[in-house]
Image (cartoon, rainbow, N blue to C red; front, side):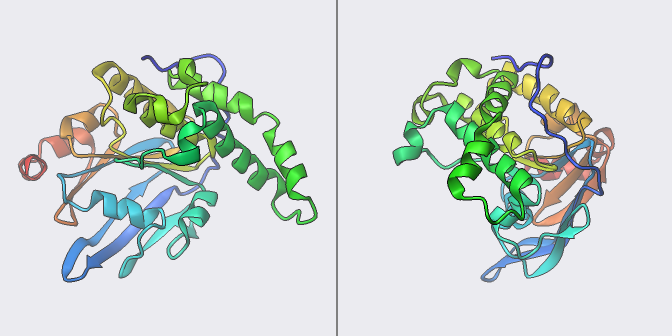
Length: 273
């Protein structure tokens, strides 16, 4: 399953800015501190790694960034706009898209939708938000009809770019987990984000697909996105990330270029734990 690097591409057009910044984030669950004063800086045009072993607090920090978890203290900003305290939907509308380490299984009506329909719906929602913001008099049917224009092509381009165009007409609940994971990424890209947070996106992918994903992430960064790659495997981030933040027990214990982080004996010990 190879991802395409050339030909038509869905327009991402991320706006230039400061990128994604989280600082001083602390999250407590009862008497347990899951994240302890952690943060990261993910500038546009770069792939920023968030590395650490299981239980380090990586997913919790992502939950804070995306509005799924409210910290005791801390700040989250995208291009200078304060995101803390906003709902997940508001954070998404401000330009942060996310994929999950363990995506929820498709059930009911969602399981019967095709991959193309799911990605197209994400594209339609983004077009409606971008084109009709502030136009309260447009009725819902007209909004949807206008938003649908071009969204199908966007879905086709994204599915092709991720190498899963052959599954476009397949039901979400019937495709292999590897395909479902890539379709989730296609849906995230359809929202035209400015920051993309990927929680262990290569989990469940074969070696060839993982390598293709690394190339895709570099391409997306080159197009201006702020990409955050969450991983627990040190070797996986070396060839793709520009900067790596290392979490251990909820704290950032190292930050720097991948080669420098790799040479840190404490980092190697922490990531092996």
